[in-house]
Length: 270
Figure 1 (cartoon, rainbow, N blue to C red):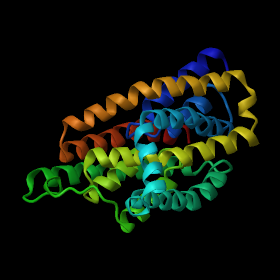
Figure 2: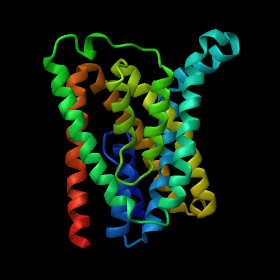
Figure 3: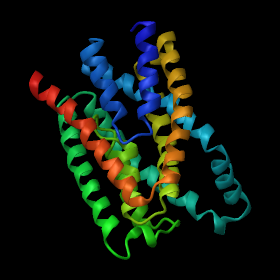
Figure 4: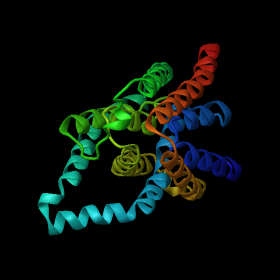
């Protein structure tokens, strides 16, 4: 991989990680179709780049993370949120890690991810319009506390999002919004629980595939970190200015329109 290619995919990872677009699917496609990597190499590279955006999330939510740790140390009663988040991470790990090992060897899941994204995105758009025009919508009864059901569904969604074509942020934010969580809280939780999963997967791939030994790969990860810092602030600012129904419609449309071109290309190449 050339210097130019490393910078390019780093920027793409930093921008798309926080959007309802599959950054893993996009980078896998670019690396395999454009840079002529094998599918396994492309998947490994896409996972490795999550190291940069994971650190971007840690930096962006450092105050929130420190407050969670402070609550855990000083007052166990007020640390319920941390326990919920840890549970979601454990659930996602139990689902995502075996799926990750399988995906690296089997290419068939890539197209399935695109189809799933189109279906989920369409459902999100419909849900957004329904909530927009009905009385007593979720937008008027939002909540901030997580329930065990929220955590379980959230963990499953994040675990499944390891599939190329599925957007982790799109799935997890959508799940929390549909469960009635306040939208700013939903986005914050979605990004925070992605940190341990992304770090674990990236470090595993970096060690097993030796990606951390390449200066280009390290540079690509750093570029993902820098571009991720800028993009995450834009997304958070946007989320503060729109109501939940518009956010659901926006996420759904992004899922659909981001997945259709890749599915079309894969069907054509097949």
